[in-house]
Image (cartoon, rainbow, N blue to C red; front, side):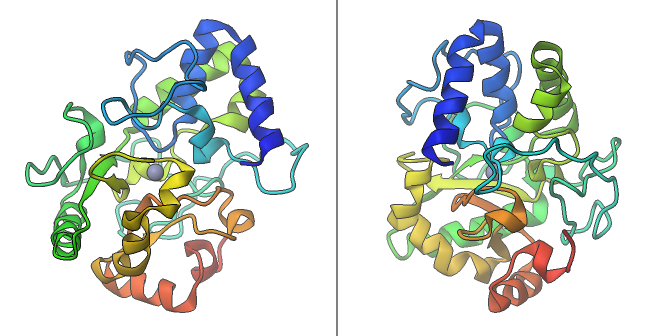
Length: 276
Ligand SMILES: [Zn+2]
């Protein structure tokens, strides 16, 4: 997010009052399955991230609210399509701002794997992910540890109900136009697939923040995640294609074959499937 955009958002949040701050924080946290019951600080923008608190309480880090570069006055978003590039339950399903999941979609085989390290000790749906994702992630974590890199899961699954709750609340407080600009429309968050995982270093430094890109953990992930079936879903320089800012922590499981093919072409899922 550029500075001007960030300042605008900051000013909006600071003047919107506690209720708006609460929901903005929740709705804007596209990478974090916070619930509406979660207590958040009244000034999350000024909060310093640390290991013990959810790393995505900073609303400016949310991909769902990020506008495409250069768009200082974006047009209202189009009505999202319910079409998908693959079956909703497929590991190759494409979910983005245009392509969404059916309202009644629920991923199968969600697991809370006790052998995976999570950044925060609490429970909840953000610990869930599809079984094949958990297995691949465990293999990746084990491989990284052999090289002295210790990874953790910041958050994974986010239910359609949670996303709907957050989006509707945001609509009720800010209006639908604003809600669509700044939050994920239900069905359009990749975390709803059970195939997306936000990964951090085990110390939580820069978790789900831009500065994560400069960590040794991020560099290891960028080089090695493909071997385990993951891609960096929102790559640097592809903001205009994905609609999201660079997120070195947001991994999407697509399986080893597809991950290798996408990585070899150095493209996004949208470009690989020729779908936007
Ligand atoms: Zn994410």
